[in-house]
Each structure stands twice: as structure tokens, then as C-alpha cells.
Figure 1: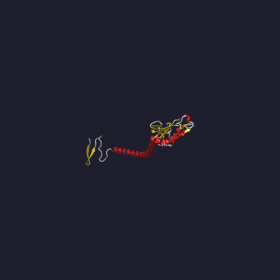
Figure 2 (figure 1 turned 90 degrees about the horizontal axis):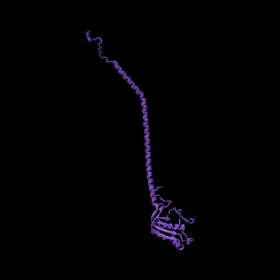
Figure 3 (figure 1 turned 135 degrees about the horizontal axis):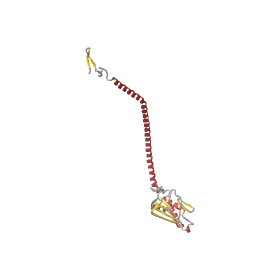
Figure 4 (figure 1 turned 90 degrees about the vertical axis):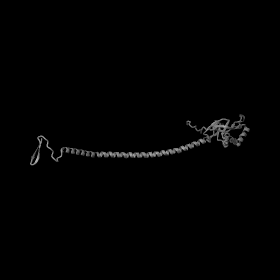
Length: 257
């Protein structure tokens, strides 16, 4: 145990041998440990500052690279947006052109359908008139036979009388059809024909009959019947079918070209 003794009016602590001495008043406890902790903290702080300073340029470079990529992507997006706007404009213009073209084509198709029976591009069925011309008997053929001019004049007269369509021996007449003689053979649209020649016209039968009968051509043909014995017969018909011209025929819808 410790001993207390009075020396000069005070007390003196006399420790026992081997006992720890009490700390002095006002002196910090364990200064070495505190200093060690502070030194370690300072070293860690210094190391962190050094590392931060060393890493700063790399971070700046990465930030600059990211900003450059962002700027590049932004320009790319702007370019794609502008291209899309141009393509949308082109598409709208193409749609408008197609609509106008489609309207024009539909109008042209409607016109073609309306004119096809008249031009000969389509077959025609209806009432009308037939004029049959034939050569005289063999004994009188030296003086008079049916010529290409006779057939032409009959066809023209029927047109004048109001025919909507005309055919000779089933060959449809158009504005480009030729009726001509080639070495004694009658050609209609370059197709050889033999008598008798049947000129058929679709139209109002009464009007066609009256127009043809009152023409000078009918009078000449009736005179040729009497003088030369040519064959002539004129008949109205309730239903005639005139085929389309081979050179202008319009394919039926859905048929292969």
C-alpha cells in the first residue's frame, strides 16, 4: 500500500515499491498515441489530396471527351431530324403527285372506255342495218363487179347516216382502216376478203335505212342491179355484234397483257 507522510506541512505520496505513479495534474493522457493518430490522419489527408490532384487531369479529360461525344451525337440527331423533315416533304410531294397522276389516269381510262366503242377498240352490240353487195352472175362480170370503191362508199354513207360502228365481213373499220384493191383482191385493214361483202352498221335502224335509201349512192347501186345484175340487199337488224379492231382491241379487265 502507499504511504502518506507530512513534509513541511504537506503530504507526500510515497508509492510502494513496484506500484504505478499517479498522473500529474494538467498533463495529457497518452500523448504518444494521440500524436500517432494525428500523424496518421495527416498522412492520409496528404495522400488523398495528392491523389485527387493527380486524378484531376484524367477526370477533366474524361469530362471533355464526354462533352465532345454529346456534342457529336447532338449534331448527328439534328442532321437526322433535318433529313427526316426533308424525306417527309418529299413523301408528301410524291403522294400529291401520285394523287394527281391517279386522277389523270382515271380520267384518261374513263375517256378511253367511253370512246372505245366509237374508235373500234371495243366490240359493239346493238340494232342497226346491213348492206350486202355481191358480184353479178359470171356472164356479166366482165362489165361490172363490186370494187373497193363500192364498199368504201357504202361504209361512208352509213357513217353519214348516223352509224356508231361499221364492219366489213366482220372486220371493224376505224379511222386508220384502209379498204383497197390489191391485184383484184379486196383488202380490208390488210385482210383479204371475198364476195359477197357484208357491210354492217350499228345505230338507229330507221335512221340508217332512211339515210342510205335517200342517198345518190343507193340510186346508183339500184341502177347497177338493173343493168349489170350486181347483188344488193339492205336489211335492218335488231341485234348486230361488231368485233373490236384487231389493231386497237382493248384487253378485258384481268386478262394477261
